[in-house]
Image (cartoon, rainbow, N blue to C red; front, side):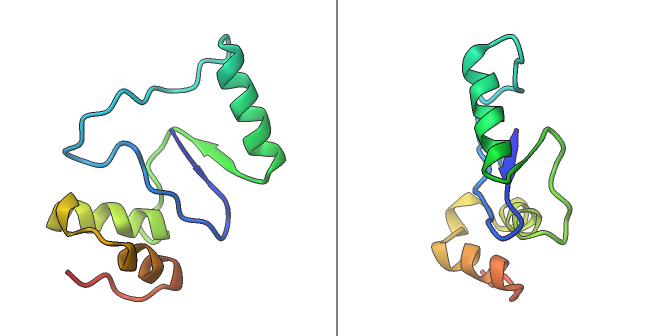
Length: 88
């Protein structure tokens, strides 16, 4: 699951090579229902699908797939949001 707003890039919990316990939203779980409701109220889009490759989040995920999670720094998120190249 990822939540994104038009001008906000969030760091995904399910990057390649990272073990995670993140699961899809269960609409029978009151906590998931509440999270989905407030995310939508705040203008976020909830999606189970990978982000588009040309989005800031898609570019960060591609960088991590190529260079590894250890190469990722705060500057990369800034560059992705601004549309600049992500340099190792």
